[in-house]
Image (cartoon, rainbow, N blue to C red; front, side, top):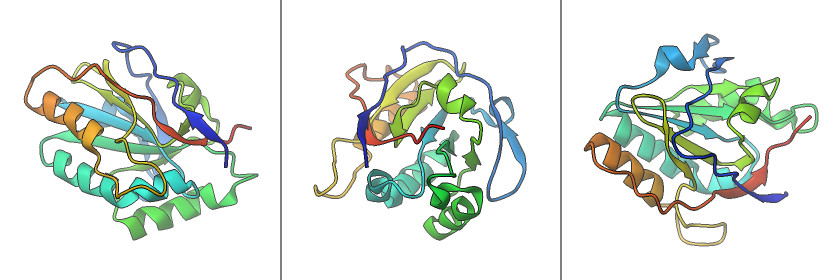
Length: 183
């Protein structure tokens, strides 16, 4: 496990378009088709990362809460499955079902999407407003492995601001997790 911080893409950056296969439905999903008029959350995760395991159940809870307010969540795995076969599409589908993901879990085989988003670690969160402009990037919350349960506080604060049409807090901290496993 290689501990890495997220890159912290510049706020205001337009979300790079993508079309990727959803490992659960088998459909190709593009950002332009599923973007929300409230907010779109794109998170880079994977199956094997202990940092993702630490927040996974709370991530599902936060997603469920904010999806009811029109926020779209999308998870993407970009790891090289030649070295991490547990992060491949079949296992992604199993994890999505067992964890109760209510959002697409997309497979970025070429890693082009991770590169376009400057994703560095899992988990890595990017929140875009109704115009697909970046308003939040970084960590889920302050929790770390071995600490108390995840809360999703920082991501939730950003989403609450978007739902209520107020300013997203600009004091944002990088996510910390496993490095994306590049080819």
